[in-house]
Amino acid sequence: NAGVMQNPRHLVRRRGQEARLRCSPMKGHSHVYWYRQLPEEGLKFMVYLQKENIIDESGMPKERFSAEFPKEGPSILRIQQVVRGDSAAYFCASSPVSRPEEQYFGPGTRLTVT
Amino acid sequence: QQPVQSPQAVILREGEDAVINCSSSKALYSVHWYRQKHGEAPVFLMILLKGGEQKGHDKISASFNEKKQQSSLYLTASQLSYSGTYFCGTFTGGGNKLTFGTGTQLKVEL
Image (cartoon, rainbow over all chains, first blue to last red; front, side):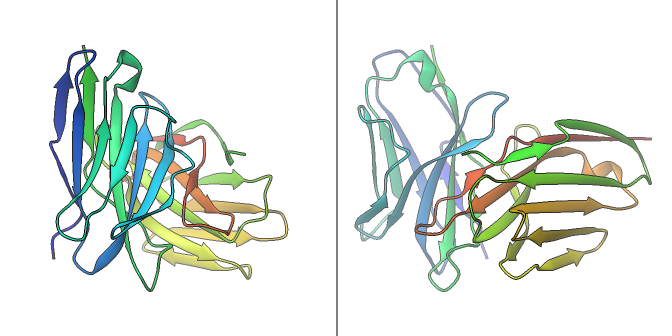
């Protein structure tokens, strides 16, 4: 039973480029969450999605960041025109419908903006 | 708003015990404990729900005092593999987002 999968594991982007991070939830899970972890800090909630719906995006920066979870395919976190401050580890978590409180994390994508 | 954990860091010798505390200023619906090793994803340890719950597996257990809005994680007879940063995460209800605590760095030495 595969866990939460994220790719790429490492991503290097130059300032001004776009970053696309992908997350495939665990089998049977339809809730996806994105968290950001800055170096030496804790995890901060960004967005909570269900298939084709954004449920809570209260942690998303107002500009340049967007997320989607289409009917088919992985959830995608997109960061447009990246800046150095976007360098961080981005973790995706998923949970089953019946137990939304049980969130299991993927290995993360480490984004470095040069 | 962010739960506060104490201590910030602790160093143990193998076999010693430790307690990590998590306090919130908000009423809690549940408390979640994770361990994260450097450069890796957080690993789910356990969830405690309302009702003064206690849980445990192996030599790691936790309690949840809903009235005090606190949870404690107990590590007994620590092993080298327990090293890492421990985070509590809290649900305050009205959504599924976890608010993570400030973290406690635990290092177990021989």
